[in-house]
Length: 358
Image 1 (cartoon, rainbow, N blue to C red):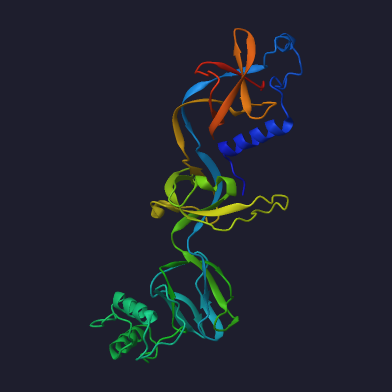
Image 2 (image 1 turned 135 degrees about the vertical axis):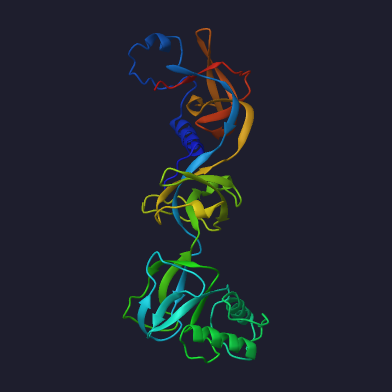
């Protein structure tokens, strides 16, 4: 994933300067020497820029992808022929049909515990509580005590639910009738086609949550710019912007993208929106994530390309005053907005420093 950032540009510029072995007055002459002999003879750079005092921000940008949260697989709960499934882009809420095997629907209910067994009177566990919570929310649990025990009252509520859906009223329920998910789901794709033979554990649908998220990545050295909770704004495909924050930061760095030559390790990050209901756009659309970064107030700064690699190590700038140029060692601070914070050498706002001619 390509990343655009003032900080990244600054680092690249520094490496280029240091690697190129620039001397104190080694600015390149961009005009090929025409009309610049007088400046060279005087030891002056081809152009100058101001030393400025003001606020400097390390705000940066990263390319991201608009998607949906909580990707997961829905596996078949029983064996048979897949006779129907929800379509790509469909949103399924509580008690909605996910798919059918041999003409029998499997419906969605909410819960974090997977539906891993057939439930009957006497069973106990978190999955029992989840089932009872759903039956109550759907209006079938009148008088039902919501707890971890599958009672005769639970069986009666299940029978009412089964009757409402024209099912055989057994009072028992299993993976061939319901599937649990933390909330409503959006169908991303079908992993099995209608007419396929399916079996317990075989993927039928790939789903996501219904809320929009953005996924992007940062190089390991820059990951500190976006810790969990960092506020961001996202430029959306329709030209609007939306506010959000970094909700998760990956723990493993690995190369990303299709370029085999790019082996730079990157950390994956996810952004959730403050108001996800207002975010629209096609799945997998490109977006831009704007990271607020750090702001330093009332500091001196110069353009990054004003920096010179000094023969003894460190960096300096070429100060131009009264028609003469002199080297001034500087201490570097924060990079941002194409500039770098500098201090030392008696620098003050309004001074001129040498830069390459553009």
